Amino acid sequence: MEVKDAPRLAVLSKQLGYAITAERVAEKFHILNTKHDNGFFVIERSQVVIGWVHIYGVHLLESEPYAEIGGLWLRKAPGG
Image (tube, rainbow, N blue to C red):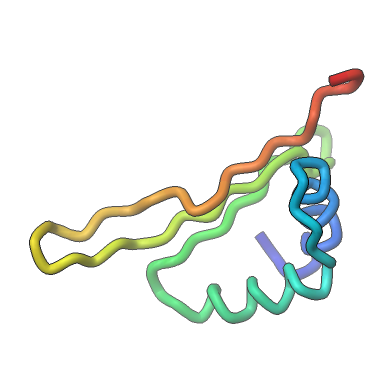
């Protein structure tokens, strides 16, 4: 994922009921991307973004570190 993907991620989020602007997506990306245990990936088909995933590390006292999916979005199918 890159900041230039923010407008397309905002559109995908709105399809799923989350009202967020491209500017806010970019702001959040800048903040979260400074943390070493966050990863962001876009899913493309024919150079069109059809989804994205955010993965982040979880560090707890009682267990070994592990990763969780913070967000996973796919574009609605045509007609869906």
